Image (tube, rainbow, N blue to C red; front, side):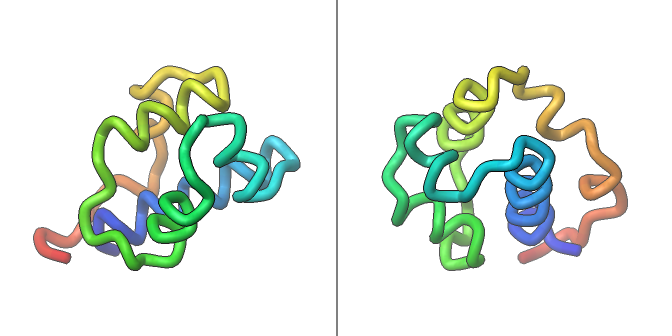
Length: 79
């Protein structure tokens, strides 16, 4: 799995766990729906740390907890 695939899957997992839509998460995170959709649908090759940080703020979680997932183990070296 690539980094961008892992980030996308993690966002979808967190939305599911919190029973919210991607659109709702974008509002909670204070980022545009198009930005979050680009990350989730793989159109963004390099989601920024700031974007992931804002997602974490919206979900009231720490950045380290976002990456504390099996999804980020054994990632492919390139996207």
